[in-house]
Image (cartoon, rainbow, N blue to C red; front, side, top):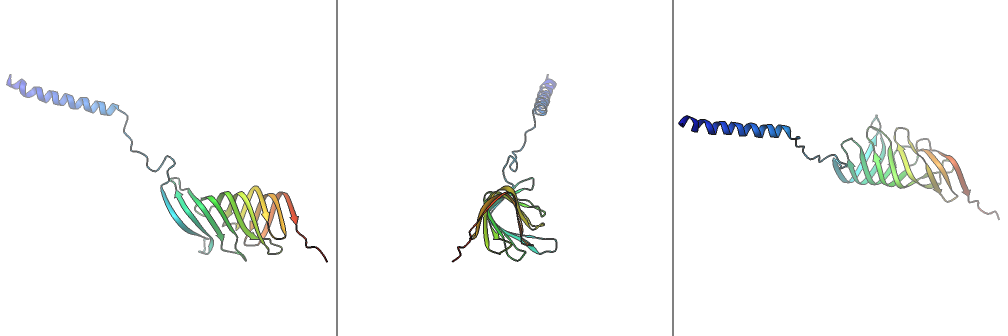
Length: 188
């Protein structure tokens, strides 16, 4: 009888342990909460200044952003972006409420009410244009869009669908559906 008193608790403890072990194995594994995924940024920075360089270390673009969020897939989204070209005879600037800033020399994609400032290549006169989307390619030295563009300057105003500007060679092409209104001074 004494022998049964000693063995019975040992057998019951072993059986309870086996039961708990089998229940834990059959339950779906508990997963840690995904703090990075689910659309949440991996990290966020505020009041950011960035400079993009070419392969020779020459600065091509300078940008500021009120905030940037970097995600697990490597994408970077900025808000309240201002981008300035750093090569060529005169700088071009572009501002937008949002921008996708890809790394490794990929173009920057500005979206929202994009406002850009440059110059007409034939006269050098200041030019402002607005568009809902604009790509800035530091490698090709271009600003381009296939979207509707509204252009404004002291002597010409108009619209077009699509624009390509090369800030290094100072070339500007209005691509489709171009309508320009020239303000010609009156002769006396």
